Length: 87
Image (tube, rainbow, N blue to C red; front, side, top):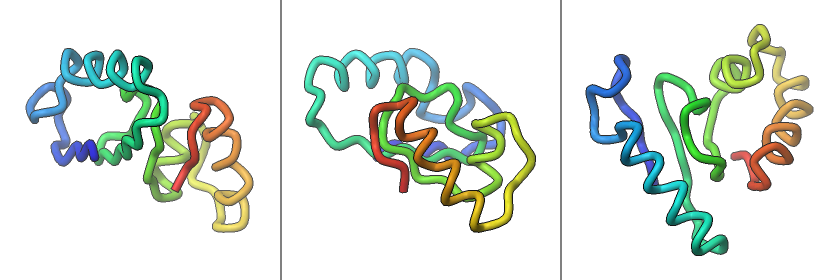
């Protein structure tokens, strides 16, 4: 589980080198279950399973925060892009 709990990039544990290493490990062992969550959004994370709210999904897709029914329609797009489920 990757939890980015800082508001400023490169100030926490999940720095770019760490995320790159996670991406390498995830591609080497694809069935590995890696869940990512970050306050700053998930655009810099390797394609893994993402846990996000509507505002985070909007930031990732470059759109305005959608109403709940549309959030459910956009999350499969993110899952297809990553090749991973979205939670």
